[in-house]
Length: 334
Image 1 (cartoon, rainbow, N blue to C red):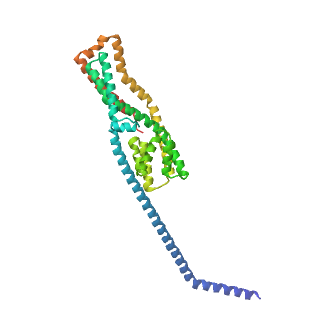
Image 2 (image 1 turned 90 degrees about the vertical axis):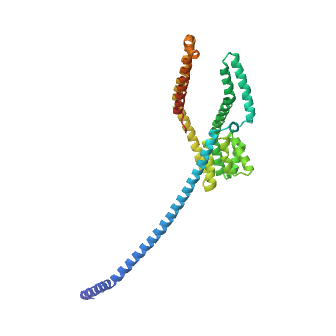
Image 3 (image 1 turned 120 degrees about the vertical axis):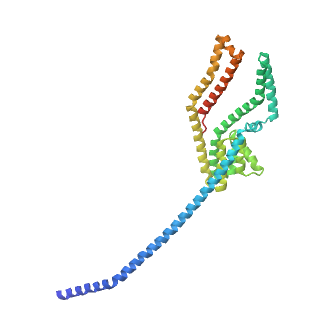
């Protein structure tokens, strides 16, 4: 084959290819554009489906969040109403919170006997009749509440020391496969006092037909603490909305321990201010006692003259105001 024939074949092939490209290019370009448009439509449909799914998930999340917020507001309202009732707690409720087996009438009878005895002792030491009557009045009305509040505070302190440990035991029990009711019964049978007594009351309430959230909600009657309210809210939310209860109880236990640490830290930081307040409050009485020891006639004018009585009354009022202000400045709610 000669060179001329080879060049001719190459030229014919190039010409055929050029003609095919010229006639077939519009069709190829149209098919390419069509495929691109189809892919865009498919992508847009996929994006629309994904956006719809995301919108549905967002609406579901928003709805669930709103339901949770409404439930929390309702629970908070109930807790605030109960807190107002607890602020005006009667002697009967204080006896119940202190876990005592004495009746209010018997308590008042014992207080009356001790008050009469204290008044007679005051009269034997030649105290004025009004002072003796004041001692008897305080003994009948004030002493029972003071003693009960002291016992209630001591019992609540012990409860707060043991309550996070009980929550940890419940958390481990639930993770091991036990239901919540069995975890509560475990604390009621093997827990430490006074947590054991409170959970036993929960179990007894369930045995008479109450649900577990209602029984735990009743715990605030005998143990009116914010920590118990938190526990009741967690159980109520889990009963209505579901969720990982063991993780929630673990987080609550951690929060309660951090809350206790914060209280101890605040108490340590405010101890200097409390000591200063005690010294300032006791200083007038100490100075008056020292003046009485050195110059009794100089001080007795306040007790024998009408103007001295007025000065003592005004001083008592101003000191009371100062003590109340200092108390509010050094007491912190955590």
